[in-house]
Length: 399
Image 1: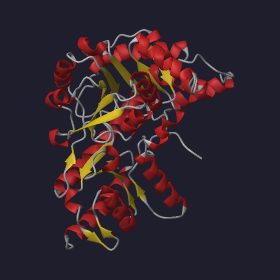
Image 2: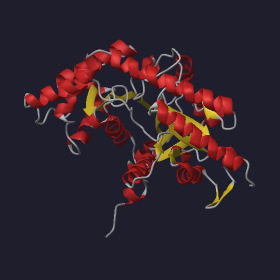
Image 3: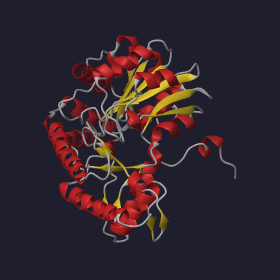
Image 4: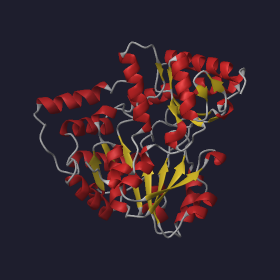
């Protein structure tokens, strides 16, 4: 039977495919070191779980308003004002089934057939796929030569009348780069002359290192009226399975997103909304403890790769990933054949050492792999040892 062309335009999530492969190997009894996680390895804080349990006991298990319960939307408004200096009303907020869902709603509401969306590469695997699903064209800009960040010069050279939106992600997956206020102000100057939307994915906002401060593009007056902020509780509060994200932006856009959501999923889980309310209004100490642990792990990996010196990487200032350049390994011969791209290197690491990493093809960077440090120090130490053994083997072999 025939399937719709829109499905043929998109590919499965590369990160989920690798994760599923790692889980399958574990079920088969294979000893693997899995450094693919896109979620914190910490439990959801206890006070958040208690709020979810209380919701169940109270029978808070029915439909809610499509856009989310009022008290959660009010808490999101308060959070955006407190943490980000952004001023919204509850009518400018929609609660969704995860930040990915909020992002999908926004893109479907903004992108017309044939529109372009500017996406800096490396990018999260889902960005171009959602644009294609909406009938748009991802306009990819390679930023690795500029440290993984979109510059004003690059942006200016790539905007066109067909540009419907620019998609920014800070802190970024997979690189961990964080845009400073000055860097965003330069982008804002360029965007001031172009009437396109800015979609700002800020899901890793609270996982930030080295004393840096998260700044949203919506902070700039010239962009506020056409910026939609995408965020959620998954990463910062270790709540990936609770599936609560949200968007805040101009009221007409949020209303359009609400119309889409009303005909797809309707409201997010009532129980999860209560838990998210506890997350946003409760103590921040557990979140800070997780952030410190991630920074300690980041420091360990940076130290190990810097000391070894054979593989370069993008220095992460946020999120929980190290994006490693495996170019020196490309072209090397293995018993299975030559290593022509990151996917080949990832397969070699898995077959040789049981080490699972995410190849960079899905991120728009086929000469890189992503290593997650959302794993315990014991796993990181094992993983680094396995990786460097493979590097030893490959770099001492003939091309």
